[in-house]
Structure formats: structure tokens, C-alpha cells
Amino acid sequence: MNIKRLKIAIQKSGRLAEISLNLLQKCGINLEKSKDQLLCRAENFPLDVLLVRDDDIPAFISKDVCQLGIVGKNILAESEFLLGKESYTKLSKLLNLGFGKCRLSLAIPSEENFKGIGYFNGKTIATSYKGCLSNFLKKNNINAKIVTMQGAVEIAPKTNLADGICDLVSTGNTLSSNGLKEVECILNSEAILIKNKNISEKLDKISSRLVIRMKAVLKAQNTRYIVLHAPVEALDDIKDVLPGSKSPTIIPLKGYNNQVAVHAVSEEEVFWNTMENLKLKGASSILVMPIDKMMD
Image (cartoon, rainbow, N blue to C red; front, top):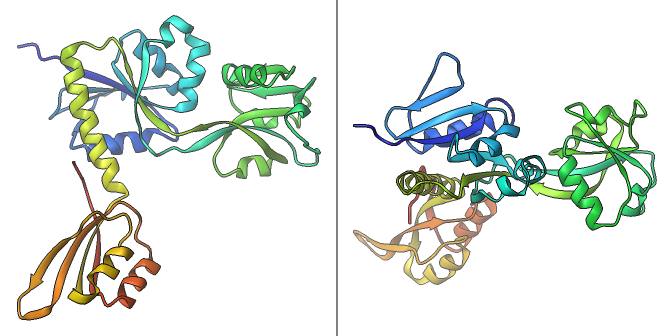
């Protein structure tokens, strides 16, 4: 029997590669790498993983080589320029994944005086994201020359190849070490799950199963399970302190008429000051635990 298998493309190496594979593993998918390391086959789920350059992922999906892909928003945005409108319209975003956060920004030499986006009129800008930059300049009526580079964009001002750059920024350390400063963000990016809109019905059902698992894993990452003991008379005050919690579960404590156990799921990070506030309200035996997976 020929079982239909879903194909997902992820970055072979780079900032999203390892996290993407870890996400699939947390979804309970056991992957077996092939000898050429370009294809991973899941043993317990109808899924094959293609390990490719992130720039190629939108093209693979638009041509139905694979049905899903994990890329940065910047890659999806740039693919409109690289693929053309017809192929680009076959792509759709399924899910924000919350990792790989960065921004596509304009940067100039640190000693330059920047008074606004008009600074770039008549200037030359080096970038690997010609499509995104062109759209931004057009929307802001900026007349600038674009020099396309593949990597090492930050050296362009030093070598007099360009007056400024447009590149991905996360911490800003690379810019600082090359004598540059960030002056304008043109796109906030993070990892997203994208798919081919024309996916077959059978593969779409498999895709939906995978998305449900991903959502469960992602939701659990920012969720904590809180258990504590509390005086009955302090319950209302304690409920007010519990971060992001819906109605908690209240369980009587055997042998303690005025004490109960409170169980709550919090969708916000629980910090030390929250625990201290709970303590001040009368809570005791406070236990905060991570949640592995969470499904509504």
C-alpha cells in the first residue's frame, strides 16, 4: 500500500536549522537521517524532511517539491521578488513559530549623522535582500542605488562599496564590531511555517495533524503549571496574583479545614517577584513546573 507522505523543507545549516529539527522532535517525530544528510525520513509519522538552503525553500514549496517549509519572514518576503508573483501567490503562512527573531535593518557608519530616512537619498546601499529593500525605498520615495551582495554585507562601507547596508540584525554586535549603527528597521522577522496553497486533501490532513502538535509544543514553552497551598480566606487575593491564569482548580486538603490546594496553568512567565507576592498573600508550598506539551 502506497502511503502518502508529507514533505517539509527546513534549513540545512544556520540559525534556524537545529531549532527546527528540535521542534519536530518535540512533536514526537523520530527522524532517521540519510547518508547524504539531505533527507530525513520519519519512522513514526508520514513525514519526510528536506534539508536545504533557506533561500530555496519557498521555490521548493511553490513547485510542490515539498508542501511545507520553515523559513524566516524575511525569506518569505524576499521570495516575492525572487519567484515572481505567480509562484509567490501559491505560498501561505500557517503559523508563527516564535524563534529565530531578528530584524532586517538599515545601518550606516557610526560617525554619520542620521536625521531620518531621507539620509539615503542619492546613497548606495549594499544588501542580500534586494526585493525587500527595493519595496521599502519605493514606499518611502527614496532614490538610492542598491548593490547586491551574498554575505559579508557589513564590510561594504569600509571598502567604499556602499554608504550603508541593509542586513539582518539580532543583537547588533556584528554591526558594532564593524563600526556601524542600526538606524531603521524595515522588517521584523521570526521563523514561520509556510505551505503550498494547492496541497492535496490527503496531505493537508497530515499537515493539520503536524500543525496541532506544533501548536501544543509552542504553547507549552510559555506555560507553567503552578501548585500551591492557600488559606481559604486568601483565595481571591491569590487568584489576582496568579499571572495569566484562568479559573484555577481548588482541592480541599485532608485534615485542614481552612487550607486548600490550588492548581493553575499560567500562560505567562512566572518570575521570582510573582512567587514572592503569592507568599505575601498567604500561599505556601509553591511549586512551579514546566509543561512539555499542551493541547486545548
